[in-house]
Image 1 (tube, rainbow, N blue to C red):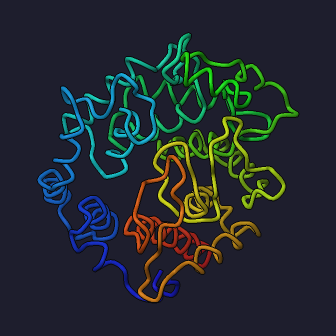
Image 2: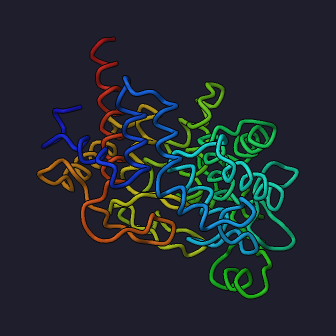
Length: 334
């Protein structure tokens, strides 16, 4: 991995300035560290106090408007899971239980906060990935994974989006009613959503279930068909969510960037495709002399960060580089 880095970023990532990044870097890159000691240090950090200050009855975020970006219970749960918290911590389990009770449907999918409830591709993928990361593996995650497999589309991606444009978005905002866009799933003329695809594919990969390998590969092939620059319009979302994949950021909810796409392609063995190579070179151009990356993507759903070097984005970049390096080593040793 060192051949791709201009300098070693690990001392900076583990300096304690960002408790979550310090914990995750030690956990993922330091085999000598004791996992329980690391987790206890995270629990004792100021980040835990931040989550507790943004909770009520152990349920994180705004539970009444649970689907809001940056303030709702779903956002805070996904952020906690990304930060390394798991079901050993009370607010993680309580928030997952609350969200599932409010929005998981009998078919296993998750709905936005509207009535009647309708399962949504991106939300289902995000929640199942977050629950698995938080070590919540039960009948709810099984049902969610089954929903994801059942709703994979002809092109390898996912859609199941009740929005058909701005009018449906307004219905959600003002009267909490879904549109009928999810009925378009069988229409092969309508391409899948890149955001929903990244979310659902991430959940399948996180499950580490080999039974999903074919579905993951199909999803990876779909991603390689996208124009991530958006010049041909192949990277748009039907809900109108702003995405700018070519700028690095840290995706938390219904978002992705070039680094996260490369992680997904690496999991399918497609990181050495022409698209994978182009994306990898693009990521490396963002690397600073200290082996660090800036956060340049502040679109809704990305982790909000001040301009400058980002420990979160740097951590994600070295995760991706390690995954690519491991694949290269496997090919060399084959």
